[in-house]
Length: 241
Image (cartoon, rainbow, N blue to C red; front, side, top):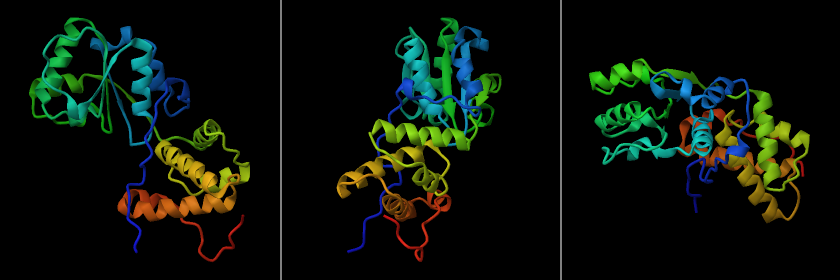
């Protein structure tokens, strides 16, 4: 029976503020979160590719400033004025641009910070509402770049440590050389290493790591972008246990 393909990242992600790792790629954005009173018009937009840490920073902001955290796709017209800071993930996916416009206006009147996040800068959203587009073009932005090698290594080490996994440096090197360079890939790899190690009843070895990479490649067939970024283990190389 053919194995059913799944999405490459089924593991539910957690975004505990204490787990956020500061790095050159996110330092500017993280610094802005410390000073919402200094945001022009009380607005800031974070943007960057998937897996760069936008959602994690929204959770950091929400926890630090007791902000309401919303999903852009679920944004609805206001029934009341906001009474505290607001953070909106995937803000460019709001089904009703007028709801976003009214939220920005209401928050500005109350001098409440609004933090938005999306893949593209707000100046490129093209909502079709001239008033909203003008506000988005004027918004202060902070880009999150792709994580570097040191960040990914530290993230993988932290994720495996939280699962009480002992992963030798050589095995970490093996994984880092083959996984997509995103936080999401590191989280899913750590989850699969945990399950595979438990099933095998032994520590994470290079053989287990190779099996995890192979499973990611197979499951990644449902996601062309993911499959393009995973380096599959050689089929002819000897399997090291």
